[in-house]
Structures are given as C-alpha cells and as structure tokens.
Length: 77
Image 1 (cartoon, rainbow, N blue to C red):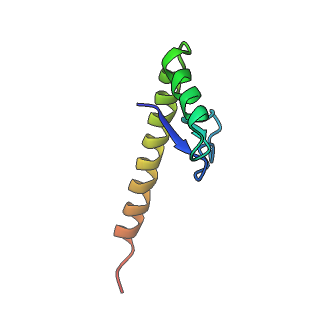
Image 2: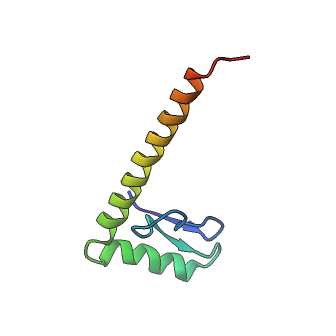
Image 3: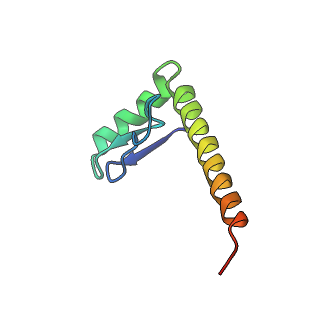
C-alpha cells in the first residue's frame, strides 16, 4: 500500500529510484486530498510507489541481517 505522510519525514532520503510515498504538509487538507486523488487516479502511480517501498524494505531487511550476523560473530565482553 502506498503511503501519504506529513513533511516531518524526508520520504526521499536514500531514494535513488524516486519516492516511495507522497509527502504533504501536516494540516494541509487540500494537499492531502490532492495526494490521495493522485494515488487513486494517476495510472501506475500507486504500483510504482508500492514497488519502490518494497525494494527499500528488502534492502533494509538485508542490512539488518548483515549487522546482526556481524554482532553474532563478535565475542561479547
């Protein structure tokens, strides 16, 4: 599911392939309405946002797995 969030988070951080969601200013009802309409009516937008989000999630899970494997290999003090 694509997401819409307030501008308190940078949705494009680390996003070489583009955003995985739409950002609106908190409290801006018109911007929120426009963002939701875009997701509903722009051909392929929702699918593109979902695909980008899924790729980011897969990368993040891979990073977490990598860090955990290193921590398991390092003896505890």
